[in-house]
Length: 174
Image (cartoon, rainbow, N blue to C red; front, side, top):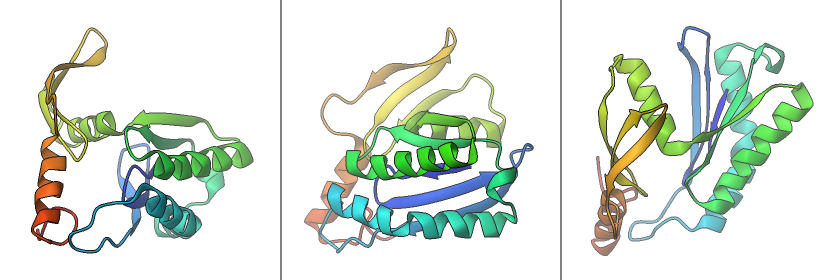
């Protein structure tokens, strides 16, 4: 089971040992056009939705908590108040059901999933998100950043541009 709560979405995914996605459930905070994410509002949203999303994921995957072999959660980077809700949910489940718990770097989670799905070998990664724009690669046993923006990430720039134009969140229409 994986729990995601870095920003405007509280999500729970469940995969099996073959990495088949059994469930991927989300509750997304509604953000008014021209507005951004307010960290405390995101945390309140996540606290309200967490148990419902977890239950929906378990039902969708047709598994019980007893069948879950571990719980991973986004440990950052992200919005502190929102991250705490995901971490607390994961810790409570892990403690109660006696499951191992795995904090995951949010950006590296995206990279590792993409590698698993594409079967890429030793990729040079251009990571673009709301909080990051970086060139990174796996070297000497860990992910290393070889270059990154020094001022504003590309994702944050797009979000700011969309707010200025009063476009819907996130960053305008798809």
